[in-house]
Length: 147
Image (cartoon, rainbow, N blue to C red):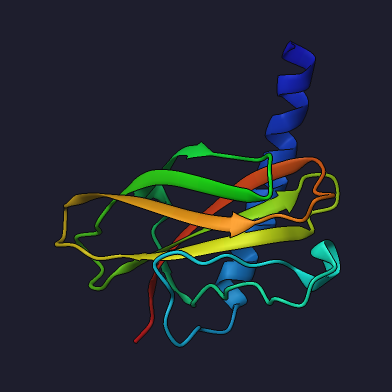
């Protein structure tokens, strides 16, 4: 079990780094939804595009993922975010369900959290995974979008 845990941490760190870079360079969406489901055409074989992650100031250190389902076709992630005091605006939380072997994205959920600076708020987001999803890991992201 220790050997498996030692392997999962580097894979999760690499997936988080890739998703973090994608979040920094992504095209802003017109309006993130409170919960979006999506499938990657390349990974899922479908035609539904993934919800985009807006560019902005990262606030991942104030964001926590408490749970993330990785099996089944409809998956949910839940957590909390402490609204930043030094950056004004809503927080857009994203969870990407990725293949930990090759970093392909199976699905992504994006939700917008509103609140006053310093408030601890709960968030939930969902996505749809393809039937053949394998080695699924959850990658968390959080930004205050640029205006």
